[in-house]
Image 1 (cartoon, rainbow, N blue to C red):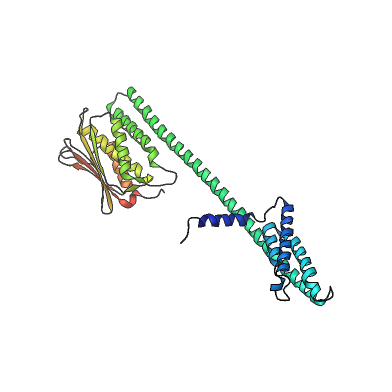
Image 2: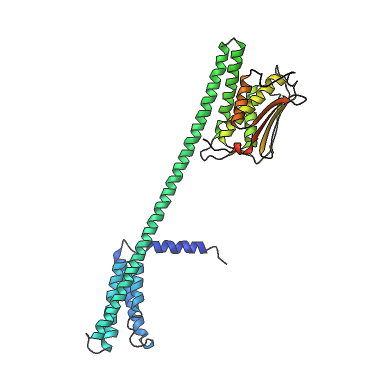
Length: 358
């Protein structure tokens, strides 16, 4: 069973190893540590001489050299190697073989020098690799922080851009609404009024349409936002808009725009034709899955369509726009009587809702 302190212990060991060699800025401490380890090794070897078999004079000196190199670096390691070699030769090698310099003493000391050199080199290479690894990790951390900061800045700039685009669209809609005051011809006034309303609605929902990471928007939430924006701009506080939207359906920005425009046109038609002259009533919006399709329905409780109505023969810019947008979505667009009232039905392939931008 792993305790909660194990990750902390591993982190401490990793940090400690990466800090080696110690006392890098104070070399005298490193040399002092190497001398102390060498003296301790001599004392241990002297006190435990009775326990060691003949021919092993370096047993306690090898660890002293390795520890000095490991803890304090190659130069203190070399100093420890020289001191331990001198201690071993003077106290344990030369007195036991007779003359001070013989073939056996030379061979023994060469063996010691070779092993110590290899130990110091290996420890130095290991520590240099650790330093490079620590530097690389630090560079990665700094790059990650810089990338995170850039991402935050990009997100802020993106949101500011969306706010400005939405504000500009609403401003254009407001300018068109002001232009209505100078128009007398009914058809022109209606066209300008419709254009202003559409721009105002799209400007209000612009902030929800796009995100810097390209994530999808929940269709039920999006439909409610569009409907609320249209109803708020209609000036019909007594008209109720009932929405039944199935959850779990996502929509991308490329499909959200035409859906918003089609829904806006359907609500506007219900307010204009089913509830004329400021009359209040109910508009019902329903969104649900139907197999591989997603059905969007807008229904009112008005008088319904006139006899002989044909959507192909209607000279309405709004309906033309809705049909063109439905074709872009590869959707089926229908407008018929619902007894009572009128129903707009849009059936969209589910795959079209999450399509990628071209």
